[in-house]
Length: 131
Image 1 (cartoon, rainbow, N blue to C red):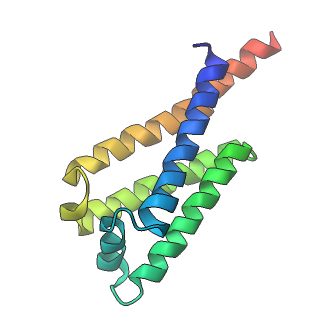
Image 2: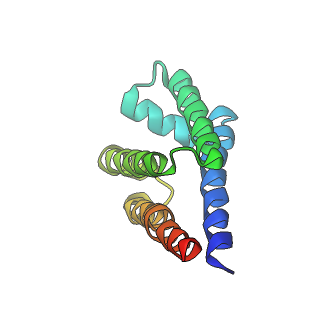
């Protein structure tokens, strides 16, 4: 697979991750554990509403990734959100996480892949196309 195709594959993969988490796990509530996590962190009284809002924001993130507009800003924002969210969950609700405290390792790997795609792979693609 050439580098441009791999870059595009990663871009679609990240879109899919945000879309699935937003639409299926939060909005459609196929994974009730997500609402329980939100409830334990932000309070159970409005956890449904907060989960819905988070789901919509995740879908908007998927659309933004797909658009490739301001991709560097988007990548930084994704990395900050993922690390912040996972550190909070690691600290407050590790018992509700899919892989427990190991979730933080997977989050770090995901963030590393986002960084690689936008700041290493893309630079290499741009340098090759310039020469």
